[in-house]
Length: 377
View 1 (cartoon, rainbow, N blue to C red):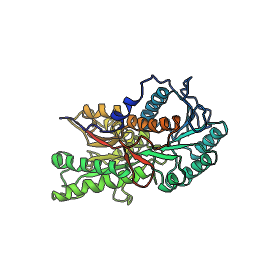
View 2: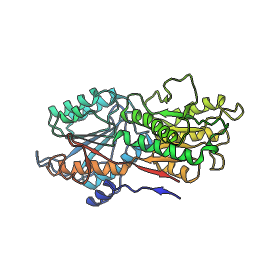
View 3: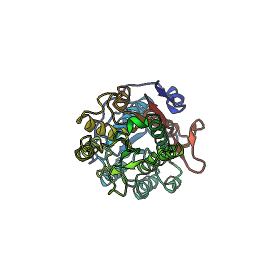
View 4: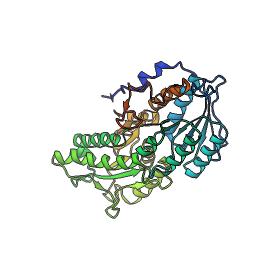
């Protein structure tokens, strides 16, 4: 039976606030010569009586989850009637910083930023300081930002998730699945489950939390039932994860890793990897692709359990087809709709965090948390 836990959140509560509008495709480059949807009628800022000119800065257009946010954001901004431009940093913080500084010089009066580097607060702080100097509101989103950055400017807010939540949900899901299917998953019958963990990016708050709790919480479920903890497939790897060194959380990185793994850890050597946990659906789908190359995961009849995060449409299709096992929904549409509430506030000359009582807002800082939900077959 499918379990689709509906989100009681912005997707339902906010979308009704704005009339729908079709979006136009947008493109961009790391140089800042990006193209994007631009409506002809813009609202006026009550503070300055001027039309909004919005710059939306994405860490990487190629990220599948970011694609869902960008598509939804285009529609939301078009519905609000504001002029906007999308910029693609292509995972380069220096490129994004140049894009932001150029946009400020070019008269953009609202910045919506999906920061590239968040391992330290420096990149976000530099962007916020530059905007603050010119009195430009800033909405940071998706990648967790240090509280001090948001608190440094009254016209700054953050829309994201509770980073540990996805890891906790994924770990519990993995543990419960294994208890229900332990003997089938334990391919070599040694009483233990060997696993691969694909980490998106070093230092990224979401990647760190998912990597930690995706395993810790699964182990908690297993040990409570008298089962041994998960065992990383490669005993020599003390980190117990494989990271996408490009920082792109990419499907290709996981496919390449998995192909190398399967050359040594396979049925013929009686040491087949028995579980894949990935920080996002892109890497989960990359692992599935490699597994299909050796006769696994074409359907549920012969499949290594693979878990991801995001609930991309393509991942949901794979789960329904028995090629993947489960995912944690990160709602790109709800994130865009929540950001649109803040844009509407700025458009109307209200405070940036007005009209947010229906959201999960942190107590001491202007941060809105969009909740996750599980998706399994």
